[in-house]
Length: 522
Ligand SMILES: Nc1nc2c(c(=O)[nH]1)N[C@H]1C(S)=C(S)[C@@H](COP(=O)(O)O)O[C@H]1N2
Ligand SMILES: [Mo]
Image (tube, rainbow, N blue to C red):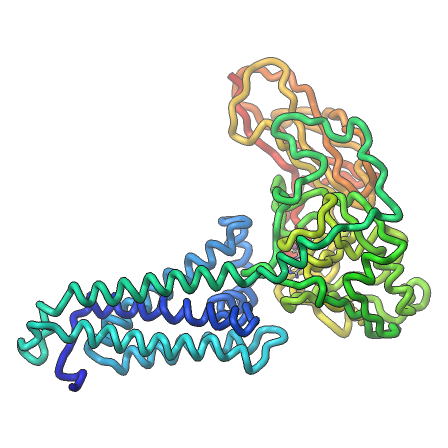
């Protein structure tokens, strides 16, 4: 029998295109898990490539609009584009098979290009996409044939058969779609099981150098105010990883090498067995945090002092005549982050962290190990899923974000935020506790002031300080009178730097300006 004599209408064609695409994605997903290359799934590889290629203004727009849901937004957009294209191609392929095959070839090429250009990719990474493309072609052809073969297809040659066997087509298409959904979700759920097991097996030893207890009065425990220590599940997450990397701690190692360094390799067991495990409270902030935003959190980290590891490798700080001024950390998923060696070795509590708030690092926050350096934005210091540390110079290497428009150096800018009342909310007249947080990591907060309706700056009450590396809560008892009001906050750090009122966007090196909110007093 020949396909060309039996044509199919556009609607069954579109359905065939959609179902074939779903089957292709499910097959590719399953294959990527079976061959233990979860990142080679074409969906993730293409998504990663889109993230890497997105220009800064569009990226900033996405973060501003969707916040930490930007990854979900990306998948929704990708899914919509793919579904629309698949439907159109399917409809066209109903008449002209070659259009379908060309479409599949184009998508497979894009998928292959993305999968094979990922960091650490190998020839094996082509398999999921290739199998997906074959499945797509087979399902498309099968469904189009089903749609074209019906009891009443004896009508004219070039008019689509109106009475094809809808029931049979719906059954076959539905069955293929259901199997695809099942295979796809099962594959996804298996993707992380190894890393999960290795994480649940870990008991962190007691740190040789525990953090002092959080001082009384550091947490004002006011409703609506961010708690002093951010619980792991509430800690902001910012990274380019579309699927959280699965790293098995038992197979993990960290290599330290490069300019002026004797190569050293540490396993996870090596780290836990050390006698210098250190626990510290450190507030981490993202350079993308807009004024008043919540890409900032404070945790109690456990880790090995990075300076100790560097000294074991014979590294000297530039202040002591060392040649490397940049430490480039690389992650399992290919991120590169450049940190000044001088900052890591100047005595501050820069950690190779393995624990967060008493637990092994959550996978989202870099399991099994990450860096945390007080006083530097995350994009220049806080490499998650770290596997490699290279000593080099800022002249010789640009880390991931630098060619994308962000500054190579990123010391944290002093900032403050009003947490309660919420902006644009209504409160009752009388005494209202206005409260928030202020941070100037590794410098410390000296003063926070509030201004009501553009009046005089008034000092607030500062909570007890934990360390200069942590944020500090504050509260102001406001005698609120009925009407619409504007509240503005600013902080001054221990180097007498008062936040500027001049607004600057997050790029290239951190937002400035005062957090201002409007409230209605009833
Ligand atoms: N591997 C990797 N590490 C990374 C990033 C990333 O994209 N990939 N993002 C950095 C940025 S921009 C920040 S602000 C911090 C955020 O850490 P968190 O997600 O644990 O809060 O991680 C840093 N480490
Ligand atoms: Mo960040």
